Length: 280
Image (cartoon, rainbow, N blue to C red; front, top):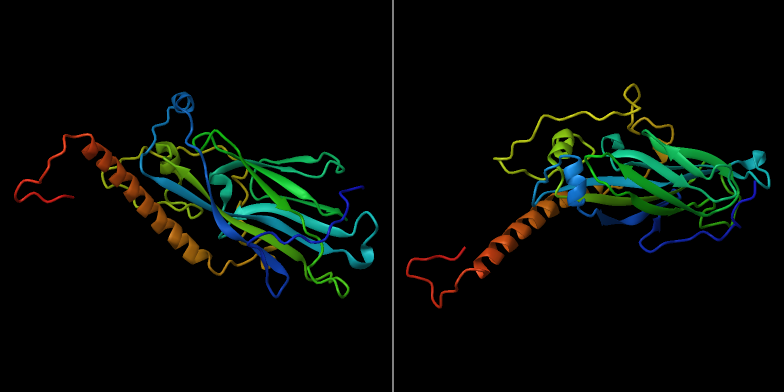
């Protein structure tokens, strides 16, 4: 099978290689645009202001050298995937994932309809894989496009490549959904895959409506995955999740204060506050 011409391993900005050959990408936040009013009307969605839902994800590849079984066209077996940062089931948020492989592959557009969202292939060339996430109808109307460079060869090629130690490249990101719908929030507020900020005490959510998934009889998490021993631990992941939750609360408070300030600015201004008046 002809694939992209082999290129030297690429080290992206923020990427680091650990001692075991694994690499990680500096975390970033992927903020999803608020759906249109037409979308909300169509789905009878009511949005919750000043609230953000954060879904930490990891996407990447794990590639094994085939050693004596390698040929000119099949030197490595690799897996590309999207998983929860803590290996939780992403199926409550993501409906399907489309992996766009190099056009030299048979059926290069691969659609995975249920978690775990992954596919395995074999070949000899490194290339960029486009990964498109589609969300459930109560989450978002738009897809999210990600890009990941498949790496087959380690940075240090001075010696023979090991068949037991794979080349691992993973990226950590946080998908942020501002102003989630009531239905979405009610459905996932207690699910471990999402980060939900402290909600207003007066907020009454509707009864959660389950989604139709193809993995009802199968586990969608990756905690006991056959490749889980090679997943990066992201030792800072717990702290990142805590920081994300705190950041959501701070941002929600900032938005609230800005709204209050805009209301105050719209009122007639007093040259001097009355006696006993305390500005808030």
